[in-house]
Image (cartoon, rainbow, N blue to C red; front, side):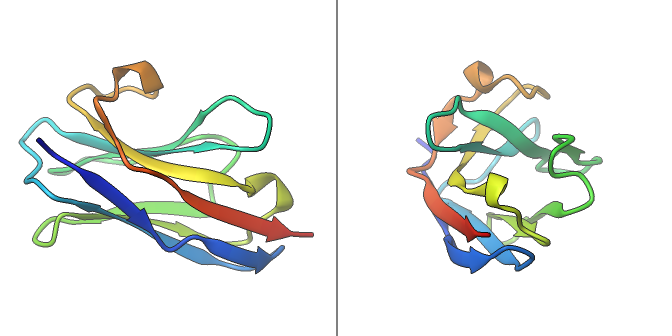
Length: 122
């Protein structure tokens, strides 16, 4: 059973940066896709970015394209989300998740972390 644990959240001023980490306790298998989702106050959980664990281009939501970068470190089983030029609209709880499908549909994701809070002050 794979478990995911996010870290790196916090409070930052608009225009600032944060890097989130997601440590996976198990070893992702060949078809694994890992993603970041977020849920802002009073909002539905939404897709942020995804990447295939064993290679391939990343996919981003339009709202974060050009500002956020998803990456992974295969030897240590850690997924990252580098967030630059943060805006107040980025305030949310950020979750990492994994699945075996290349999809932005959160219902397809089998395993979720507990989430980490990001607060951006304007």
